[in-house]
Image (cartoon, one colour):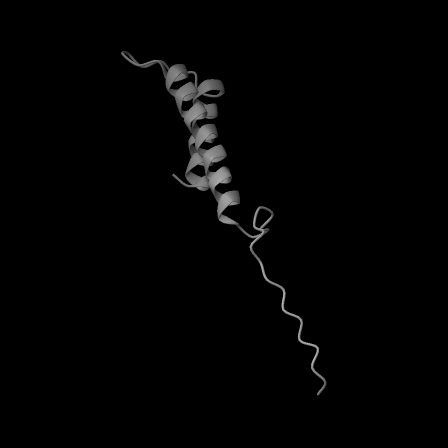
Length: 74
């Protein structure tokens, strides 16, 4: 599950919790919203954790770089 899908799930969960006032027989929309919100937040955090361990764009956790200095006279 990617970051965008996690954020969409969290948003849909929040909408179901706080914005929807409908009642459906046999299903509690508040519980479904809470589940989606929690799964979305956990998925986003895991996605960010794996992204930072991969290196991402900043490379803050990467220390395996090599610097080459070429000081030959031309």
